[in-house]
Image 1 (cartoon, helix red, strand yellow):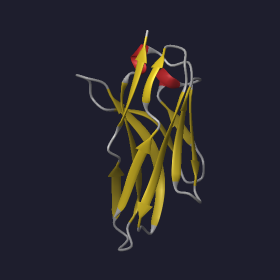
Image 2 (image 1 turned 45 degrees about the vertical axis):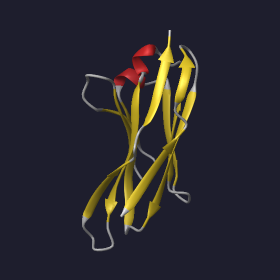
Image 3 (image 1 turned 30 degrees about the vertical axis):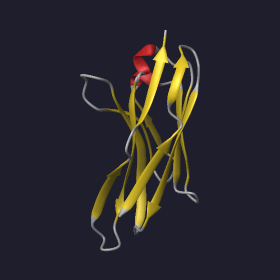
Length: 120
């Protein structure tokens, strides 16, 4: 199984920046798409950004132009650079990874979540 460990969350003032990291470990045949979701209190979990193993990216409209997702395939790590943060970005951010197990079945793993709080 693949485990994900996030880091980099915290408290920042509006307009500030944070960088989240998510490192994958464990055994898998392949890790394909990786991404970040977030969940604010009382709201459903939503996609923030995703990136394929080839580097293609996808962003939620609310973060386009402010957030950048990237990955280091050698380190099996995905990053989320968050600039111009707004109070509306306050949420628990979750890393996710999808791929194939050694048995060639599909899997999806989630990290434990990291809190991002943006003060006004």
